[in-house]
Image (cartoon, one colour):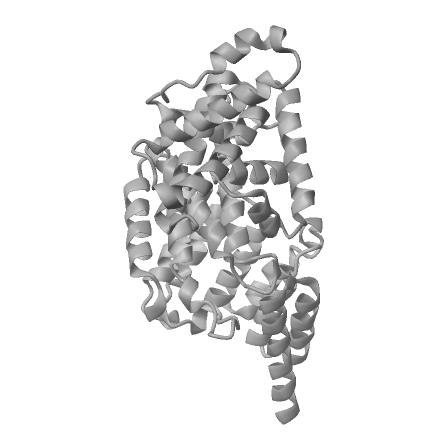
Length: 410
């Protein structure tokens, strides 16, 4: 027998709480994380037949603590560790597990870790994903990811990272890193950087779940609410983004009846409650742009002047090449393709865009709008050669082929 969907959801929810409880009580993040994984395996073996216990968190804490006891007792230095073992005896879980979960999220995004390491550790410790699931998300062998996670835990130990919330002076910057990690998880799920599928619903769902958790823990943080709104308003379009055979459907051609009205309503409500309560951040602005798209009845009703105005504010708040790239599209929709191409030209020397296909893809789209079909076709093909996403390769190559056919008939 295998775990039911309800039991799997319960284990995912309990994982960060159990790990946070153990780390707060005992320290030794790496040993505690291994013990929690053992407890999850025990649950997977027992719960399908016996059912989940009345207090699953206490059950998991008890089992994980016993695993720690066994590990310490078998370590050969019994006398030196007697006091430690005594402290490790199972005890009821504390009631402040949600505060512990927030602390755990900050620990996983410790500044001593690289961004990929922060991603992997957050998915493992807070998200409850297995090493195999994380390896699949990063498109690397499971053994490689296991080694990477092991090194991450060694880094945490070497940095003497304490299981405590960062000081007030450091908290805004640390929260910024946490939000960026969750944003990256969502983006990789919404448009996979490589592989046969356009999106990974497991990653988008996990990013939304973790951001909901963070919003529950920090309800007054505008950018947390903004990020959650952005994810919901963006994910609302998922069902319309591809055809039955997996082919990409561009935003302007999507069947909006397939969009999730529940996600849109929740995202707009979050944004409405958040805007005006404090300084407007990048995630709130991106959510506002997504809301303008989602509330349009069809592509022709899209309020492009408002979107352009929001991108101009976003570029001042959080400048970057991807913001400029998207602003170029808005400029083209308001002032014409040539104006948009002029904005794109400012990115040609930006080395941050040298290894992404998106600059060529947007240029192809704007050249097509301008009627330059030959140049547009070449740009589409260049973009197709640069992406590792199979659906995007097919879509871009097909756009180029259609332009070639149109040119031959003209």
